[in-house]
Image (cartoon, rainbow, N blue to C red; front, side, top):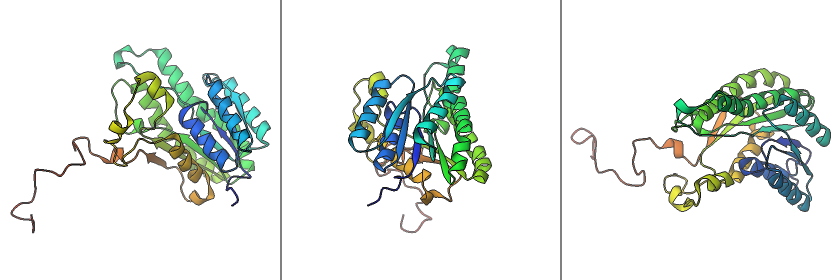
Length: 274
């Protein structure tokens, strides 16, 4: 079978670890030529490139500091030069930190907004001529369920993720006129290296009990969704943010254990059969 991305060129940012690397691997498995951007995770990005090469694919890893707009512009130029054009941009790169609101510093605020929001916007701007030249093309922005639900001590991070949802919606109606579709993905809990590094040993089976799907997601799950959104199969999806969280957001906050049958019964005396 012909791989559906065998003639496509893809740039994935933040691809040295976690979701970004998983997304890059899935595009490569579909035959795409891939540039994996990284900031600090050179070993992870290079290992992914070597695996893609071993599987017969084409890829390279490029470094850029997303706190620097000069680096953002250079990444766009180098990626397009390596690929010979661009069909898909996956804006995944992002960082987080947590702190009580009263302890947040301007430096922390600036860094997260520069990396999570500003870099993605200006990378898209620099890539736009190549994307427009190869229309129909696509941009997929990675946001988070933090855009919709609050977690204490994540006010900066949540703000950046909400901004991504908003500018994805607006940008989509501008760029669709140029043949570039823009959408976003909001992952819930996806098991990545950073969780284990920060939180230590995690019992994923126990965590899965609170997720309707019955398991914690993996980077490849996000990758498959990104492949769909960037493809012609999603040609009528414009400006949307698709949540991929195993149904976690579908559970009301005060539900309790959604597996259990409810003891309280409403409607007695006026609903037939109750």
